[in-house]
Length: 284
Image (cartoon, rainbow, N blue to C red; front, side):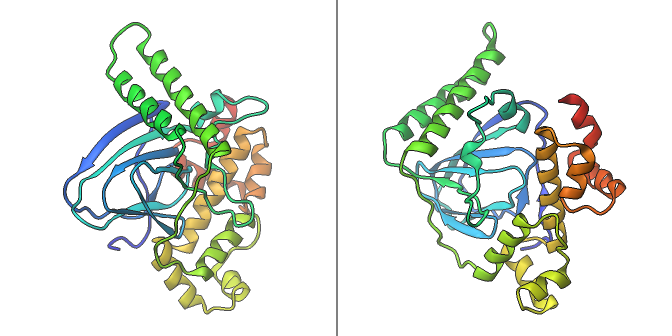
């Protein structure tokens, strides 16, 4: 990997964006993350997808679910045309349509036992046809100039997300690990995500997992594409943002996410999201 750390890429200034893309040449992508949710509908190509330390081999008609803050990248294995639809959806949009007993974010949930994502939805049921037909209608609506076009597109997106979550909750789905996965790194990622309010320094982690400081830094960057410090900082900030959105006070979000000083928290938050946690609280 050319870059030494992953980066945040893309900005979402609207509730959602949709792209239908086809690459006819091999490209190299660096690890990165977004502060919004990403859904990829895979049509064709010879592609693996790296998400949070694990590599998945994609098959046509797979749907890849990438949560806000999840480090990821596609790995293009040949020049076979790589066709996909990419849908970016803001957290605000998903929250807007949440109910007391349901959430459109359900399909992005983590495995409870490992805190790892369930990223690749794969099913042979007829519902997959419904999802791909639904995304075609949404794609067509993007260029609609008729009355209430924006509202119509939003309605189609909500319908798609409802069907996606129903498929996630009721149908057979699977994800296939195909790359070389370092089990020690998987354990460390799980530990970090479950202990964001604890001491997660390199010294502490190396002692916890009985590996040298130098080797830990080396294999972590090799397997995830990022440094431990940046990974921990990003995860803490995304965790704090979600807690604030769900009613937690700014002070509690700061210290519960592992920051020792409120001023450090607000500066880091601004660098990540280009706004302050106080502004987020006022907008709720």
